[in-house]
Image (cartoon, rainbow, N blue to C red; front, side, top):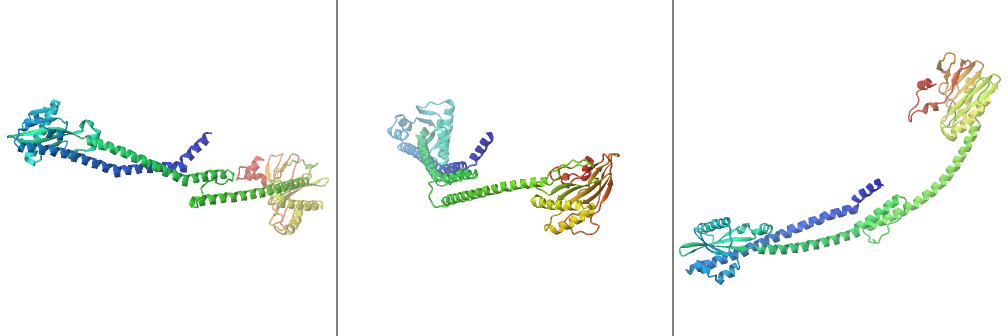
Length: 484
C-alpha cells in the first residue's frame, strides 16, 4: 500500500501536467515582473517628475509674488499678516512662518513647533539666505526636489510634506518665508498606478490562464490520454485512445499511429496466443509420449539386481524423462554374472534410442561367454557403423565370479573398491576408449582382474554424480573418494 502511494506521488510529481503547471507558473511570474519593470518603473518616474514640477511651480509662484511686493516697497511683514488673497491662492490652507535674517520668528500662522523643530527651521532659513546671496537660488526646499521620491513619501507618511524657505529683501532687511507644501499628489498618483497595475496584472493572469487552458486542451490533455492508455496497454488491456482531437497535426498523427499500433499489437498478440495454445497442446502430447517412453525405458532395466554372488543397491535418476543412462545385469551361469553401467552422450530421445541399441548388442554378446574387453570391441564396431551423429557412449562391464572380478572400462569414472578386511579404499584404474567414437583396433580395451572377499564393497557410478555439488561446480574426485 505504502509502495503504491509512493509510486503514485513520484509519478504525479514527474508527470507532464505537473511539469507543465510548474513551468507555466514561472513563465507567468516572469511575465508579470517584466511588465512591472517595463511599465511600472517608468510610470513612477513620471509621477515623481510631475510632483516635482508642481511643487517647483508653487515655489516659483510664492517667490514671484513676494518679490513683486518687495519691488512695490510694501511692508512685507504687515502685508503677510493681513492675509492677502494672493498668497492664499498659492499656498492654500498651508501654514506660514516668517523669520528675520537673524533667525527670529516674526510671524507664525498656525504652526505648532517643538524647540528642536524651531532650531532646524532657523538653520535652513539662514542657509536659504546664503544660497540667495552666493548662488542666486531664489528658494530652498527641504527635502530638495531632486531627492523627492515616491519611496520616501509613500513609505514614510509622516514626511509627506516639503518645507519651502523663500528669502526676500525688503526695507533693508531680509525676510525668510517658510511654509510646507503637501506631496499628496504623489500618493494619489501612485494609488492610481497601483490600481491600474493590479487591473493589468489581473487581466494578464486571466489571459495567461486562458492561454494555459487552450494549451492544455491542445497539447497536454491528448498526451495524458495517450499516456493513460499506454499504461493500460502495458498491462495487457489493448484499448485505443478515445478523444475528440481530430486535427491532423503532430499530436493527431501520434494518436493515429498509436491506435494503429495498438490494433496491430492486439491482432498479433491474439495470433500468438492461438499459436501458443497449439504449442501447449503439442507439448502436452510430447510430454505424454515422453512419459510413455520413460516407462518403456524403465521397463528394460532389470528388476532383480542381486544374485548369490553379490548384493546390490541401485540409485537411478536420469537428467530428463528419457535419457542415455542405462544399467543391466546378466546372469550368465551358476557362478558367473555380468554387470553393465553405460552413459550415452547427450540427453533425451536420441540418447535413449542408442541405449536400446546398446542393450540389444550387450545382451547378445554377454551370453556368448566373451571377456569384457572383447565385448567392448565388438559393441564399439557396431555402434560406430550404426550411429551417424557425433554421439558416443561410455560404459564399464564387470564379470563377477567367486572371489574375483574381471573389469573393463570404456571412458567411465574409475569405480571405487572398499576392502573390508584392511579398510583400504582404492580406485580400479584400467584404460579403454569411448564406444562408437572410433573404429576398433588392437589394444583399445583391456580388463583388470580384481580379487575380492566377503564384505568388500564396490561403487560404480557415472560422471553425473560428480555434478551434484554447488551450482556451476563439480565434486573433486579425491573428495568423492574421501566421502566413500
